Image 1: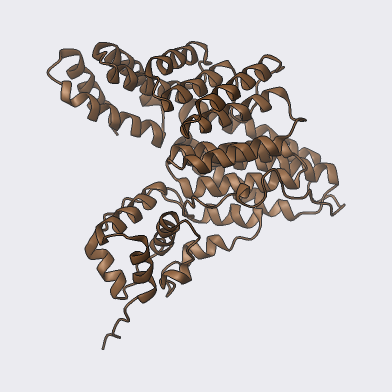
Image 2 (image 1 turned 60 degrees about the vertical axis):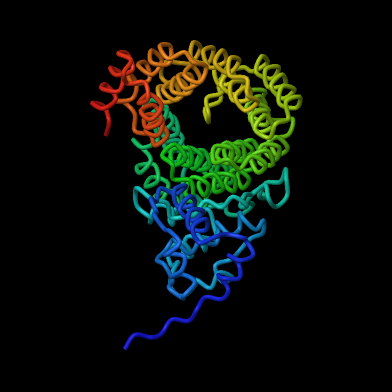
Length: 438
């Protein structure tokens, strides 16, 4: 005989406080699922079942808690939702990963195609104390890991970075996650202080790259966790610039997901964490992201002030930054983002064109993404033929890339061009896109 359900009064009270209809609540949960690569189709009937006492499978309870957290402006725990009866084992196990090594193992355990972690808009290192990093580790003195071992890991940073830039995050994401999981036990090994700090630093760099690969593939919960792990490892290595770059990456992610105020908080915290001792190219990178986040929040004066600072620091830079590859083309991309947020489409298009002309050939994924963005602006400005020509260039790069963002750009192109399919060049573009569609 089936045990009767007990109505979930905790969840009902939270939904009422949120002022949501059943349909609006379901849509918010679906949106949170989309951020971690889940296609959910919940509706008001699903919500009625939850309120009646049905507990959905993991990670849906965690998504419900996150949707309510965003709506109510305070952290809503799983326990507060009344959905803890075996419904979130995987998400809870991941959230209990107390160390960087534990996080890397938990992230790899989830397998490809979906996130272990839920993206939490209110969760970041910057939400504690701005400008702080974890204290450097000061322990151990034996030689379980040698300098040669660490050098071998350091060589892999460039390998994975080049693969990501040329082929997109989807091509090497699973391989890098597995490599990091294999490195995780070494983080606890005894080794000389200099070797230890190098190992922590290079693992932070790889965690950052893996975070970006997950971000590029739309797996935002795991991307966020990899970035947070990179922040932690950078601090433990005594490398505040690595912690700062991780906060900057979290800001980029928050802006992409529409959390503009949080993106600004993270960008400013990154700048504070980096301080005045980081190399000029790093400082430029950080100022540029503050500019983009300020543009997103509508602060025109502050945004352009930060862009000028970024340009000044970049002029004094001695070389490229491996993590992120910051250069004049990247600054022009940030300028385009600021202009776009402020509604200056012509200026945004001009900056995108500068970025494309000066971007290294090896950065295929960035080129494709920028071409897609430029084509959308041309179309919004009423220049259909220029848009079609630009999208044709985008399609030249598309077959070589495995990237959720680039796939999304292709889907966006098809939906935007379809109303013009009676125009011969637009029809030809759609036919070409159909042949390339995965």
